[in-house]
Image (cartoon, rainbow, N blue to C red; front, side):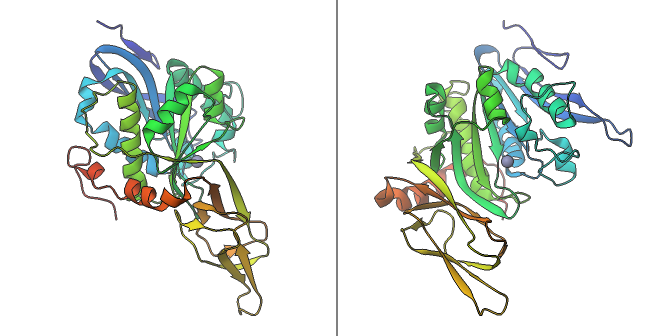
Length: 348
Ligand SMILES: [Zn+2]
């Protein structure tokens, strides 16, 4: 029998699951605050992996992905240990905000320290209680407010384990990015925990495709790590990601009101008009064009833009001839809506 798993002073016996409320700094109203952590400690040996949501408190697709993950019956036969944290930035979540009450971005404060700022303390608790136990992590994000991301995995693909798992996740697009300093991903790389980031959808919104692709990806990774049986929550068709060579933001050349001409997942060619920016009377019009050919993986949804604002995130890929078909197949696959994986109606 495996030894019990210890987290936050609570012991979880092998073959059982528990929700542990980790104490955090409280509210100034003296209301206690805790972070809910779900531990599934399998009967048999295997890796320890975490899945986290809402490190940015307003990015809620990940919370729904984790809610659906927790309901999977196959977790009863899990090998290894799964730690699921639906809401990491509890304070931002309450305020429907990306940030903490001290206006810091938690995902720039890792690894933190428990005698530091509020953000640093929260990061330090997460590192000590979660990351230090784990070999792998999947951190679920969305675009920032008024922005939308095509479902994508970002990972340091020079880490061979992470590269393999990133392909196994099989998000529509995959991009290599060295983890920025201060991020959870960066802190993981410094403490032997390989973390990938899933980015999909928009802050403060549920997007059903992003949620389904995310859940499917997490299950794919757990299967690849042999934490879930290969037959568990069978996804019949095997999808593959399109690798992006590089990405770049196209910015507003002037302030004004933007009329976007291209959507997420659309292929654009060099020189193509992405948007028109006008003054409210429509007297002056400026076309924003694509600096190179690629695919739109992120965009600004709010038409009111300032000069310099990031409007479209374009990814360069060699797979242009097959990209549209593979994106379509990857994102509109009904197999992963199969009853054994999603036992509930879609969020519209
Ligand atoms: Zn985020």
